[in-house]
Amino acid sequence: MTTLALPKRPGEILWFGLLGAGMLAGAVAVAMVLVKGHAHVYNVTREIPWGILISTYVFFVVSSTGLCLVSSLGDVWGFEKFEIIGRRGHLLAILTLVTGFGTMAMELNHPIRMGIYAIISPNFTSAIWWMGALYGLYLVLLICEFTFLMLGNRRLAFISGLLGFFAAITAHSNLGAVFGLLEARHYWYGSFMPIYFILSALVSGGALTALIVYFNHKARGRELSPKYAEFMLTMGKLQALFLGILMFFVVWKIIPGLYGQPPEKYEATMALINGPLAVNFWFFEVLIGMLIPFLILVNPKTRTVFGVMFAGMMTTIGIFFMRYDLVIAGQLVPMREDSARGAHGLLSYFPSLAEIAIVIGAIAVCLFLYTLAEKIFDLEGGHRH
Image (cartoon, rainbow, N blue to C red; front, side):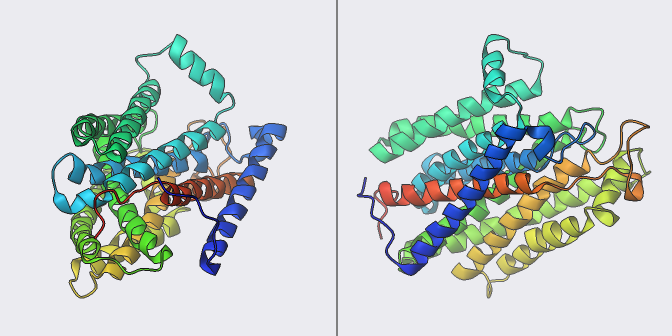
């Protein structure tokens, strides 16, 4: 553990200023929700009850799972090149998971009451109950593994890491089941979702790992050591593989929604392809999130340290929109005849300023905590080169 120093460099002061502004915006929005209530502040409705806060929750917990899986390649599965990011990866996995919980809490009217009754009156047939239980177990195992890594106890870190690895997969596949088991929502329903969620988690984890390695060194004003540079290039190859498989999955996610024009599933799919979510899908998901990063990473000339970082940044942005589109597209098809329909015969939703501010605040809090952790903890461990 190191001494916490106040920011001195202009770039560092600007960074903390931006994070402070983001957290302030989020705090003001939270206060508005607590004073006025969800119905007066959020743009969610009876027809579209899940908005951007749910998709942001999914983004954070998916990122946590991906960071855990990628970091475990070193500490659990013995890939030496990945051992250098074990502490950082697992710390950020903890922070993204906790931030995701906080975002979810702001979506609920009574989060404390929910937590109490989830314990004293569990519903074992509910995928959402299992989501809370499994992610709670996953968080405990993450904290244990990070603690043992910091203490240098490799044996206990391996045991907790192995358990955490399978807890991450179990919890995350169950999150996919929260959507996939909703038979009334034809766009989500099916066994495809749990597998799709795990694969996209690997893409998120790889992208964020590249970002924290690159910007941690740049923030300290130093170049990447040969070992970190070699890791970035290896991460780039692995990320290209993940993206290639993800694009294949996205194609097969679209085809069942078009072939034979199945009721409701077809309309939701068309909302992505040629409807209100088309810009999100084609520009942010496909182009920014997958295609351009894949082309950067698959080409040895552009798969440089900077190229891997840039591809990771683009992928992270695209994945955020991917979560949003998934959550919203599944709800745009009306389930009631008397629902107010807009263009394309679909319902409409756009997040309110308060919802957007809470999302910005959540991201700022996560980045602020991670920045402080870099100053407080020795996240290099025995891997200084």
